Image 1 (cartoon, rainbow, N blue to C red):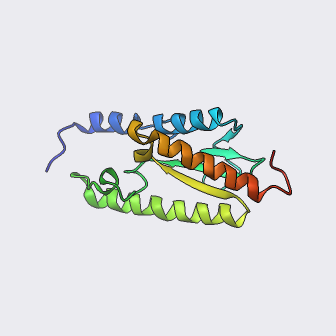
Image 2: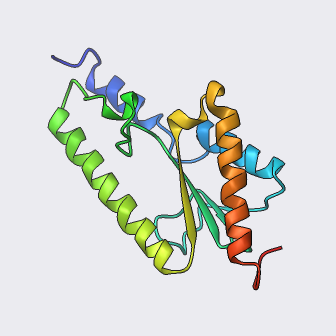
Length: 149
């Protein structure tokens, strides 16, 4: 099936896709802030430039878009109609890069949690809040003898 946009329109559309400060990321940061967390954003000195870094707790939260990172939900499994081979390869590379970055972070002593875009929908917010609260508790308990507040 041919693309219904001109190359210039498609280019403009793709350039408008944000990599930082997305709606799901802002929502997760808001929840973490309300839970009393202080954090850094997109630290370039860490593998994969994680979205949210809590250095005192040695915790990292990654916020992944379902399509771009190949989640198993309906949106993540959706196959592009145009240029399908390119997008499948791109998403596979993204997933491999995510695995390498998470392994390197864990190897460096960081605790990592991934929040998927589909988990930030309004009907799932309470579950997400409980999950983040539990994750923060695990980070604090693990660091009880050291740097955690």
